[in-house]
Length: 275
Length: 115
Image 1 (cartoon, rainbow over the protein chains, first blue to last red):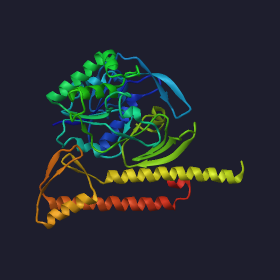
Image 2: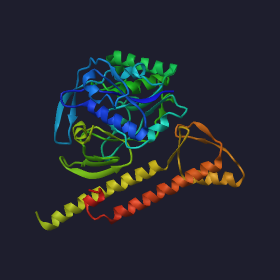
Image 3: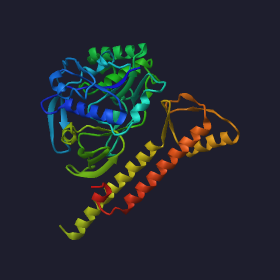
Image 4: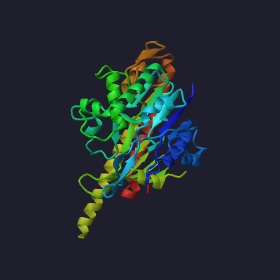
């Protein structure tokens, strides 16, 4: 069966998601020996790195969501964020077995290789680990105070089967009727998030309760938020400045090694990737 | 700034980074104690090692275990499985021990993060 990684990349005026995807493709080859395909609306830009991508798949985005991008605790800007095509991952993936990733997930180990041999058709992380260690992560436990369990759409494994086709059809249905589902599931934020859409669809697949449709991905999902800064990336070694609790503009210097990491600060990530 | 206060702040930064690095080492150790067998994930614990060892002592050649998703899986060659998890346990513990000792020796923030 064909295996590979799939990412969605839609640039805005300040963040080059396609470059991040190219960097991820390079690391996917190095650490996992797996190909990576990109879905984008800017094929011309993606072709700059055509040697790194297995396939460049065109898909238009119609979203124009604005989101705040932090660069540490002292700088931020509001930018367009186009994340509405990810629910089409099942139909767009060229692989029988796919790991769907965010472009800012930095592979630094081979743990994801273990997705492909196991008995699970669909895997996703429910728990994630914040490197700063003090931040309130209740928004990542449940989608709202009275909502269902939160799942991370950052890193998802699926294979092509009828059940997963149904799941992704459901994801697209929830997306289409987002205003309705947002109210039913008591989401306070109006911002569209794939994590929320996936979480709601998983809840429905489980018969509107907790269940075992979604198995746990191998290993753990570690992350740093965009209020932290990636100072240096050298192979599998991350040097980070982690936001300090109650000390605006101050950071804790830290070194994280040998494990993949979701780096949400796109600006400091751009300064550290070489493709 | 008063020199004593300056030293206290420097010490405070050192202690914060030290605590963070200790936490990361512990997490890494836990990750390194994760064993994968045909896509099944199991945590290598002292009790798993003892359990497998006991079964082998009683001449059992195979075993059924449960993985991180509570799914059962069949270990056909228990002896080989025990060797593998023992090796991995020893490697992970040794690395944790060495890294922790290196950390203890570092006397500056820069030293703690290999800068």
